[in-house]
Amino acid sequence: MDRFNHPPGRMTRRSLLGATGVAGLALMTARSWAQSLYNLGLPGKLSVRPLTTAFPQKGEMVLQRTRPPLLETPMEVFNVGTITPNDRFFVRWHWAAVPEAVDEAAFRLKVRGHVDKEIELTLDQILHDFERIEYQAINQCSGNSRGLFQPSVAGGEWGNGAMGNALWTGIRLKDVLDRAGVKSGAVDVRMGGLDEALMPDAPKFLKSLAVDHARDGEVMIAFAMNKEQLPLLNGFPLRLVVPGWYSTYWVKMLTDIEVLDHPDDQFWMAKAYQIPKTPFGNIAPGTKDFPKEPINRMVPRSFVTNLKDGQLVKPAAPLAISGIAMGGDAGVAKVELSIDDGKSWSAASLGADGGKYAFRRFAGSIATPVSGTMTILARCTNNNGIAQPPAMIWNPGGYMQCGIERTRITVGGGV
Image (cartoon, rainbow, N blue to C red; front, side, top):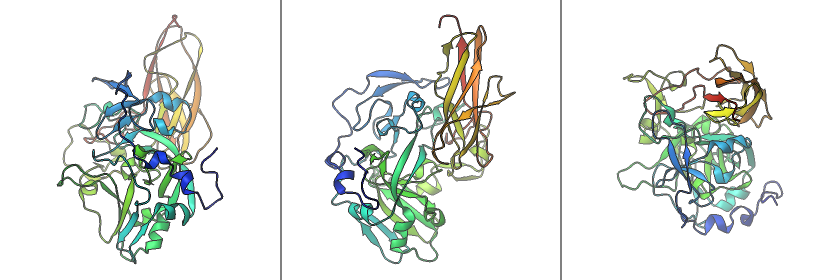
């Protein structure tokens, strides 16, 4: 039974906040970390990572780091559909002091700062006092695919699996801000969660949106993910959803909202997550003294998901090609395929449209030769007319990789 199948405008506390989300979840179970190994296919470097099922509410995930937890979704998951299951959804935290339990009765969402009145909302009020909204949106780490950067850069070397698409349910951030009353002269809205830095002089993880963005009616305070309560590691009990923007803004375990009358100049906005102020954040390796800006909107990407790089396929036969695409901050307009290194392109067919912020499936077919190798390219263009760049991008932070992926196959008679 759908645990969210209740009369509009109201859900019971029991239906959303069951014991599994509140009673306290250890971040590690007694099971061993690695059951097997997974090859991320990173160029020119160690690509193998352990697969683990040792985290609560999570199935088999690629283990990038234990503390703070960094768990990557295996690419095979993205070949099943456009919605990423909660138990296979990637995990990324900045600091290791992640709460292992949340007391629902004591939890409060605070709104303070440049407002008419400071307020504190209980989970019950979040569930019952505001209109509910729902949409699909891709949550993608800013550093997704960092392991593909050449030359390599510092930071977690993700493959392509630090992303996922979910159906999010929650309330508008705008409505919560309106209850507090945003004063004239407000500039930014800064959000923080329950996670804390380990050292007293380390900056707490905080992210801000311009006040007009925060109040656009799309930014969500989510309490549900794919019709289930948020997993602990994905931000239970509340998280911010900023559709079309990279996940650094999607603050997990959201507990504090501060309206500012000045631009947010703290570390996580002014120094961290800075990208070159160029198309796709792309610069030549070694470039210095370039203009920067905080990372923001996502850009188009596409991935062939039914074939693996290096796969052996049947000769002289039709070969089905399918995968997923994202438009970034706009819908997917088209996906094209090429087998001659981009000299010519053919249109793929598009699957159902889950909304402008969601994954969209594509499919096509090619004829394989009698023998040899082939390289398949997939290129997404969004509804704003922006297409993926032909080559992999580079910047020193390893952010917003979006170059056209290449899937190499071998045609052989042993299939």
